Length: 187
Image 1 (tube, rainbow, N blue to C red):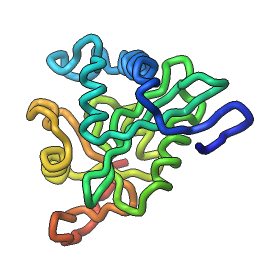
Image 2 (image 1 turned 180 degrees about the vertical axis):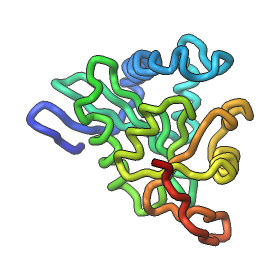
Image 3 (image 1 turned 135 degrees about the vertical axis):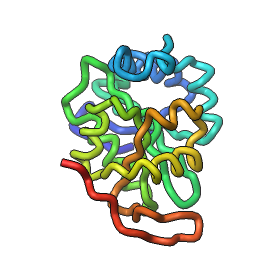
Image 4 (image 1 turned 30 degrees about the vertical axis):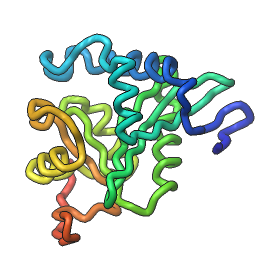
């Protein structure tokens, strides 16, 4: 456990947190409604069964607890040579207080591997959040290659998503470790 103030902490989520995680994810995901492609939106955004499947597939969820209540979650998935940030959500009424940044920093400290994040291309607030925290947008070509390699998502989601990477990721890196030049971040 990692404490933040007297009553706040970051902790690994357990099966007992499943229903609260479900609530947080679906509350926060309301921000996507009308923003992401209509054919990708559904309610609930993530069902309990989908959440269980993600956990069974190796997504380890960490939560930010405030005064004994979980208010934010962020998944972390080891994919061998990289880690993925998955399903990062903070309750609507708890946003813009640094909770997402605290969770992200906590997970970054847990690995020396490169970290990748996939999100919707039209979720500008999410892209802005990761860029503010030192991540850079990858090229369209690299994004599509990485989404197909590390994520299990439909082709339609691949073409409507972006990938961001922390400073440990060298653009052009592949399974044999070849490194290219970094992709510039557009202003």
